[in-house]
Image 1: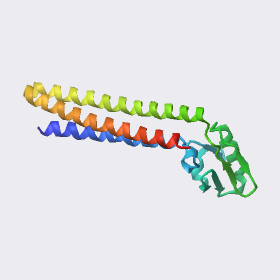
Image 2: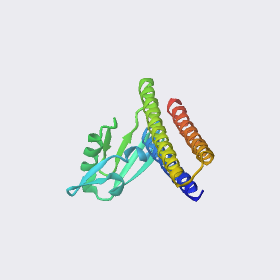
Image 3: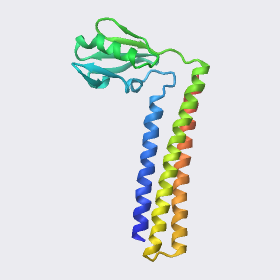
Image 4: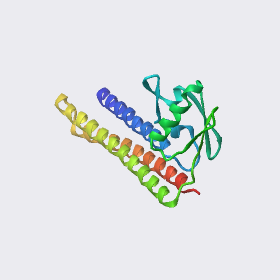
Amino acid sequence: MEEINLILDDSKQAMEKSIIHLNLELGKIRAGRANPSMLDSVKVDYYGSLTPLSQIANISTLDSRTLTIQPWEKAMLEEITKAIMNANLGLNPQNNGEVILISVPVLTEERRIDLVKRSKAEGEHAKISIRSQRKDANEMVRSLKEEGLSEDEIKTSEEEIQKLTDSFTSKVDELVDLKEADIMKV
């Protein structure tokens, strides 16, 4: 029974990691409002090495539609502007010599639908990861049969693993539904 509890704990931890990853991916999908995390993927050429933007500048929101980027070195203003343009995020940075302002455009209906599809695809990736973990856990439980585990104990363990899988799958659905509602809200 101790081995079964270890398998269940390992499965639960792996499934929680899938949820954490899903949250990160959904956070990258913008829902019309300015959010500093929109620029997480931007890498700037900082004296010859690609460095995340957040490590060379302060990123904040001025209002719901405007991001401000205050670099720690004014010499980096041009490099940051270039990096944002090259990141292909659909954003147009404005450099005023002190800070960089980014006005986040209003999402069109078509773009909102695309973002919802992307959110659902991320949710499906998380579900696949969770189901893969279920499969691995079931195989580990079945391998314990050779060590004397009874058919009833195997069946009970598989049911526990399925309950765990169902609960995490429903969490994925909730997160994707919340993100969809956020994206479609005008």
